[in-house]
Amino acid sequence: MTTATLDLEKVGAFAQRISGMLDGGATTAMMVVGDRIGLYAVLAAGGPLTSAQLAAETGTAERYVREWLAQQAAVGIVHHHPEDGTFTLPPEHAAVLAADDSPASMIGAAPLVSGMHRRTDELAEAFRSGTGIPWADQDPTVFESTERFFSVGYRNSLVSEWIPALTGVHEKLSAGARVVDVGCGHGAPVLLMAQAYPASQFVGYDVHRASVETATRRAVDAGLSDRVRFEVGHCHGYPERDVDVVTFFDAFHDLGDPVGAAAHARQSLAADGTLVLVEPRAADDLATTIGTVPMAAFGFAASTFLCTPNSLSQPVGRALGALSGEAALREVLTEAGFSSVRRAAENDVNMVIEARP
Ligand SMILES: C[S@@+](CC[C@H](N)C(=O)[O-])C[C@H]1O[C@@H](n2cnc3c(N)ncnc32)[C@H](O)[C@@H]1O
Image (cartoon, rainbow, N blue to C red; front, side, top):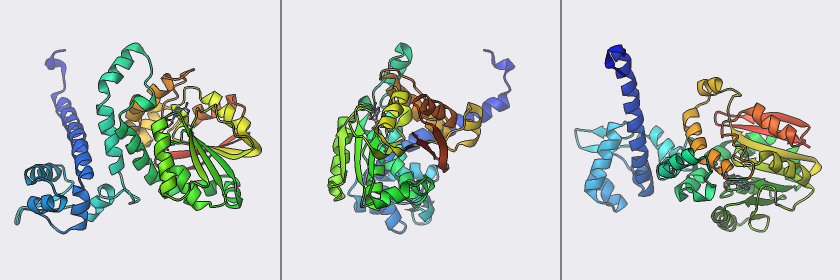
């Protein structure tokens, strides 16, 4: 390619956009460090701090903290006050970065990016060979990040908006229902439901033993282990029958055989039971998804790194992709024998699909 044919203004503008992306990638690593050693939490709690004060309060080395603060000021996360050499984290930024329990928290997503970077060689090799990569082979930061980041959305919407939007599910859970969650991971949505519905019983299944162990610890810590258990189990291997609700939280598109998984869920459900899929919100075509879904680029990156490879690592390997859209999910559920499928709720990030046997 010769530069003579190029519109150099466009090259410059695009190079600036790429430079912004490189800033973002590098900043994500800085965010993970700031999160790990409590720099954001202390900045959020304290007034203006110098690098020496922040280092003293976090028990860290001042020289590193000074460099980190310079980077965070350069990218606009913290404000630098040259008159006295202090730094502040505005409360609006703290709401996004300093605490997992804030409804606006996004800091939990940062380790997911670290996890992706740690597996680029394996992914490039999978592109060449076409083989899959099981969830269990991902970097552990991915499991931590999935729990932390998805939990924000579950806390914001699951009990207050999504369950009430499902036909009769709130009433059943209130009265005492049996719930199976498939692809439970660290169990965050199951624990939220168990806290909200003390008369109901929950069991979560996942093929990833380490995740099941973490979920089990979480249930014990929350004092819920009398009604909540987590087991190692495949999406079409669990034995329960006459179940009131089967849920898949951000797991259905990860499966190699989603038709088989949905058919197994249908067999497990009572005649008036409900299947619930919580999936990333996406349109049915790429152009609309790219144009309308916030963080679509992040979602497609996660899908390329985690969801698609996991599906390809399992029998059938349907590889729906994380942003497959409602029509593709409806097709799978219909193939599995479900007679009624509807979108019950959605927000910027997720859509909730309800299916009846
Ligand atoms: C993106 S994570 C979601 C975890 C959890 N549901 C949440 O929302 O936090 C997807 C989970 O599906 C699990 N998974 C993948 N294939 C599975 C299969 N065939 N059967 C059961 N679980 C599976 C993975 O191990 C992983 O824990």
